[in-house]
Image 1 (tube, one colour):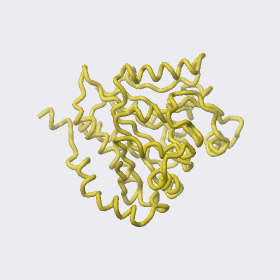
Image 2 (image 1 turned 90 degrees about the horizontal axis):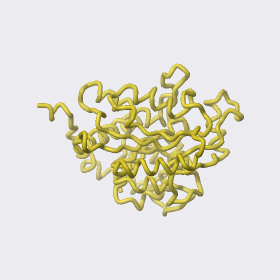
Image 3 (image 1 turned 135 degrees about the horizontal axis):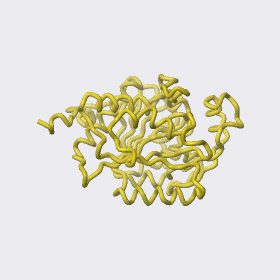
Length: 298
């Protein structure tokens, strides 16, 4: 397990984007070999960034790490350093019952903030359909699509203050698969601000990949920023595996990278922070040198 500690959330976003960029380019994807990337869609949860009704991003600042990471990846694409032509993506979750074009759906978030700005083919993006007639069949089909794509090379995720990843809230099975989940009241209350403050408008159910689904990825990168995530990071790093803190399951993954900012380390022991900071010279070699597809073209 690696713990990458940066000073600020913007640096954490950039480090994560650089890592994704290098992993894609080093994989050397092509028509017969796609890079499969798992992506976080929980950007509305716990202040991790959002889009307003015009499709523009709002609520910038600490805690919006996934959105910041997407912005850097878009920048790399526009500069000609990275292509998503041979990348397949699988997003973590989606609300049940929200129309696909609803401004607060995760379909809308991903297209407005990422997909429409890069060269990924629409048929290579996979997001759960919260309006499917048979929700469990939709979840089972999602698992099959991941298998058909050869599994996930790199699954990127974020967490909530209670340590949940995707919608795998406290008490979720650590071997769970993609399924229908009833949202906790804390989650519903936290998301009410995105639905005009009206609880009755907030979806009460969601489709989500399971902890086991993410654990099957060949590599997992978890983005954790902000002081409000500090206790969750402490539970993930310094305490044992516990289904009440589902992010702790990734202690048992052979290739986990936690990327955080200084604020997120506030609950960690000083010696823990010092230990991982002492490894940063080694860990930074994962993003330096920073590769570019321009080098391949020459």
